[in-house]
Length: 280
Image (tube, rainbow, N blue to C red; front, side, top):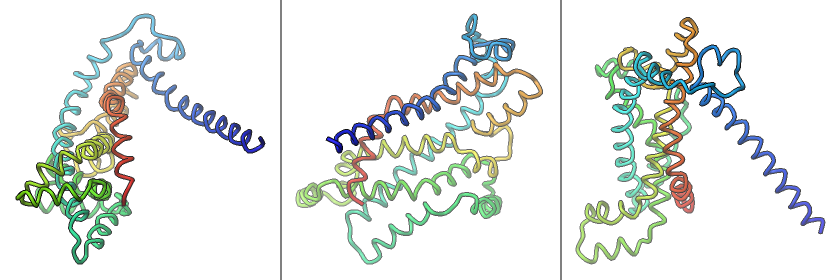
């Protein structure tokens, strides 16, 4: 009985802590959202009340006048090809590591895993000089290549475990039927690994969308700022322009893609991460 009560108390305590954590996360987000529909006067003098009438012009002003729309487009230009090549290249590498034993197999995997231990701050100065020497500094494709390089280690590590969960009999049956290795990979293995690939695409999207330190150092042209840089610049400008309602509206616009992706694909993310963790 004591053990049962202990378990119940532990469950209650865990649920209480999770509820407190959820409240600590959700409340600021909710406050930002309904503040985005207020006037500046309401934000300062009635911060805890709902807006008298929704101010949709705040979002128009943030999108057009504060250039959030341009930063939004710049971000998509960088991260869409970065996500595509990260997933494709990682899938190829992971498939070979998981399915083809060869001398140095584990060493290759450990090489990629070591990239997960490398702090991004230590790479900033070498990356600056490298991209500058290659004439890729402050360019979209330069930042895209850097995003791919920093996303490969974890993606390869995860997908290697995921490909190991796919029954080897399918590979053997396809080879017996006359399929070459390219056909096996593209027509059989990739479709079977769809949930893992989608999980990694979503995971990398969330990371790249919120990345700040890399574009801050490697993208100096204000016309090419991505969303994180643009929002930081906007926050600094609003201190002098006193357009706080526009700032809150810009924050909400920035949050919408990540929240939408997570809400729509929450179960897919959990399913893919669980499957990939079964084998390592």
